[in-house]
Image (cartoon, rainbow, N blue to C red; front, side, top):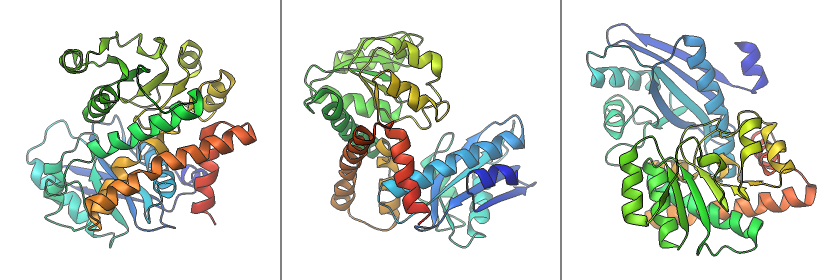
Length: 339
């Protein structure tokens, strides 16, 4: 385990359990150079503890990079709660998790993530103030979508020479909270939408509201389009998936889109511009971080605008250095994290 932490330049890893509620939780703190670690709490079933720890470590590192390039005074962290087969009292379990967070003396701030809700954050808030994404704080998803939309415009300009999205063909994989909000914004900008989701009801709604064209889930990554926007699960791009792409650029909300760092080289070799996921999808993090500090909505919205300029900077460096944007982004983030 220490080898994994060394490779990722990790600070600390914390494990806690509470037999009374069934809590088994991991908090991974990757880097606090810029400020307290902030990252979501996942509540998912894991086959074993090692897989849960690996997930927390991988995601916490991404949060450090995301916060650094978003210009936030935050470090990167992630929490994973191993979901038990049976939950007697969900509220008590999350309150116990709140006590775990409180024991870290403010070094980690949690937020909503896969498998958790704002109600769960309310339960955590009973035991600690180091939590955001509560029902009072609001859903960060619309802000993530706003940032991705701005990032798509910056990507279109860099790859296609114009940020006018009128009649641009955009394929959206995944119509969850972020994907659907993104579809709404793209439709308002005049883009032609191709959509897929495991929930056919969401696809039907997108057809009805946005005139979207449905695409089978197994074909969405290879459908001809100008920009492909992955907004579902991670690791969607491996060598085979990249070889089948028929788009000019990839710019979407999903975390950890590349199965490995080398995939960025494969995209570069095919002439496909890739918007690094942790840069373009930082809107949600920006919202929860600044909202937690009491910033006003206009201030948060102004900060979201930096996503577009940061991507433009990364694309310019990538073009000048003939390097994949993902590798440029990593280098820029590491310069801030390890001065």
